[in-house]
Image (cartoon, rainbow, N blue to C red; front, side):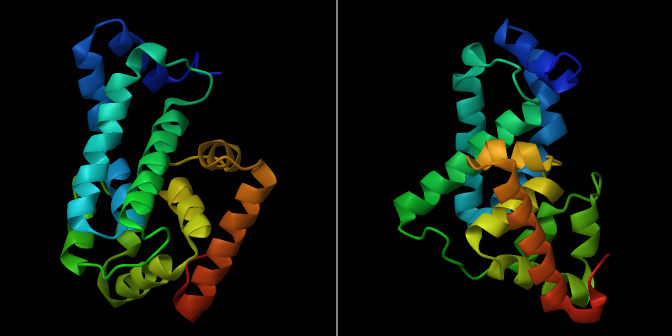
Length: 188
């Protein structure tokens, strides 16, 4: 896998010394990655730290990168691990912190719209944000990896260290809980 993955080719170019390739990867993934981390750690200051740590690990591991999976899968596995490290260090594994609605809104960059960002506008968006935060950690991670990272069920499993059936179940339960929480306003 990875031969047709343009991002994987960019990462290989970066590993070979092409700094512009890193700039392209960063530009392509920074918004979705930041939103994933923000919605995972729920704290603006921690988000910035975890985001920086994630890219630092990409840089540190560039020479070990092998395109065995899509680049996005590799990147979001690093991000997921950085979030887990944050929760372990803070003693808040899976804990929910109060969110700052302005920070969540800022995470949705208008020049790079995405389906979740569009859904997070207005009162229904506030309800969706709250519903996402109430999801159990494993279900929230699966949902955000699918929506923000664009990962497949198999890639979500690879990223979170579970088999594809478990990843599929977590995603299915997350969607069901979100639909239940939102009632008739839930997207199909």
